[in-house]
Image (cartoon, rainbow, N blue to C red):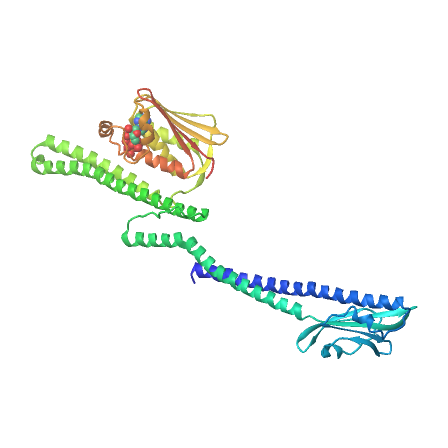
Length: 451
Ligand code: ATP
Ligand code: MG
């Protein structure tokens, strides 16, 4: 069942239910109010008769003038004595006159059905010195009232049917407008599925409902994001192919050289072997970095444990210092600084930063660990070539190198910092770069104590 028919059915069903209740209430309320008016009228007349009798000293019950002054054509009035004898009576309606007389010590009023028509009957006793003498009885046809009631029923039916018809069309129209954008979105999704291209849903401005606007906007945002992701993926593939091509070209040229002259010329042979080894290493590093970035997209990339950051930094600095014959100084206020995170990834992050510091400077390198209130701060400072300010926002992008010449001599792939950024992001940390060309660079990382 479509949302539209569901909505319409639901609304109409409720409306019918409410209308039925409302109509029943109005009908009985009107009957009650009007009948009470008629009853009051009859009671007043009976009161007047009893009043007159009292004035006469309870004499002359059979005087026709007693009743004729008060009589109305659609009524019957009579005086009944305590022995149930009708002593005085006025009226032309046989059916009203044939109502049997009653005797009781309290006022009685009721509506009776005579031949399918409603009749109001009233019996009012009167007393002389505390003794029941008789009753004044009156009956009145409610024909006029009933015809009004018929008009009321007619009017209620017409307005109810009108309301239902109006509700059906109104809800149908309203839900069409409401579900319009949904239909549009479904169509767009089908179009995307069919063509493989990303389309956005157009808002034609007349959609007032905030939720639908939000939905369309969220959909478009999602498409934008997908678009960006696909676009960056494309770039990545293009960049990666380019990066892979260069070392492969170098290797294949040297291999050719080896084939032609390598057998006789030892110098050529050594140069070729040296170059092939270097480029192969570069390729290996590049592929390793690319694999790391690919793995980083997976959900279970992190292996979280509790570990001592100080220990990791000290061990790494010692190894790198020895390998590259550089002075790497570690500064920490505490003996050990514990955090929850992926130890290997944090080690890799530090390796990337210290590796850069080694590559882009000649002076000693400082690594600081600060145990702060809201987390742990890691700082790697070098006193090397520095980074121009306008390059800082770009340096975390994949394959980004500040200048090509620098890259060829140092052999970097430009993926190091994008891996570092990924590691910081998954640890919900922040990174800041302070650098001055010629003076050096500090990369400062803020990590929460646990993730
Ligand atoms: P890789 O680390 O993948 O081997 P890379 O070092 O060139 O290659 P990144 O680590 O991502 O790549 O760094 C990007 C660029 O930012 C570098 O090429 C370099 O130009 C610049 N850069 C990074 N760290 C420093 C630093 N400490 N001093 C000066 N320049 C830096
Ligand atoms: Mg690097």
